Image (tube, rainbow, N blue to C red):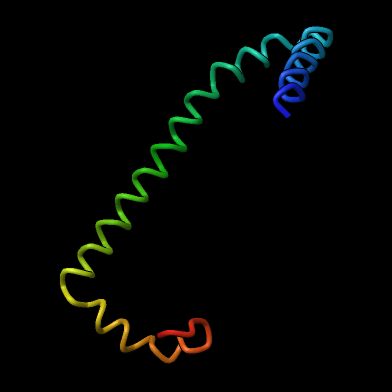
Length: 81
């Protein structure tokens, strides 16, 4: 699988050079790290947000109230609840 990926990259570079698409290839190569950074930043900040909200719910004791409210929904999905 690793060889297929490398051969594919080489093939795509050759095709890009044959069809004179160097500008688009350069833009894509330079834009990719920024896109990856934005994706990682979004994922990490979302994880931090939900982790913080769940900690607040857990410490405040609201988890017990939510468990009581949604207990009848769990019966069909989980066996040991």
